[in-house]
Image (cartoon, rainbow, N blue to C red):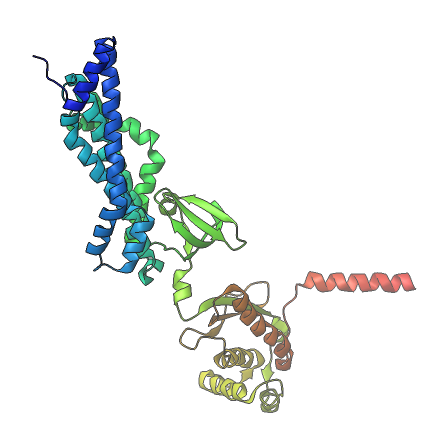
Length: 420
């Protein structure tokens, strides 16, 4: 005996038959009416939920931080919860609403509703993860460690499982069998999704090892990147360069290729600089006591710097004589020791480099307290300009290639010959 539909639908069905419509057409029209009724029920649930259920949920979550409530609302978490409740309600009443229809029709309807529930469930989790990331980014630790890549990794895994479950429902296969089939074609997947897989693994490695963070200044010449990391995703890293241009780098490249991270410099007490001063070897000579006193009392040399210079010279000199170059080296160290922009807690020396055909090279090695590029360069320039002025006081000359001097002499000879 054929099962009857619910009373209202059965009445409508009989009316269509009495009106002369065929049984097949009557069934189709009644099925459409049942679907419209189901949609109407869902709309009523959503409407009621927007005014009642959402308020109840908010009241139960009062113990949570207000940030959570704000971000959950912004990410439509509550709206998706209401849609999920509506979907579950559909699945519960579908057998009652569609009784009397063929098993195939009922099966298709249940399949559609099941897929809908699975998709809405993903949206619920997705909105919660987005809200969690938003809340985390308001915390101080978000400046040093981002969880965006972990959130995106979870989303990718959820999407993969969602697709597998939907496909298994549509083809009526066990999800485990589908996973086995996918495993058999892993080589093809690894080739097609090579960059995504590599970036996924790299993003986990970057976060675990803290290779860099949002806000770090990195330099990667191979990729044309020289600026601040603004965003780290599963697939790419966004760098805002010093000229405000933006470079997008694949995440896996940050692991497989070399780059420079200036974070330690920014967190340290100073930024290192090394500058050479080339001295002409022919200007090096020994000094008499009168010459030493004259240099030490020169008005261009501060009294404190002069006293420190002599202290360094006396404590470090083991010879029976003092050279102008040795006194000059002690002056550089004394000058930097009293310079307000040079870090006192880090190494600060003036040292000789290996001999070459470019004169005697004294390297200034110190750390600037100011680490931003503009102020850092001003500090270094101030030191170098001071040495350019002070050097002649020590009866020293900067090294200049002989060919340059010969060229100038040749030009002077030409001028003299032309005048004559």
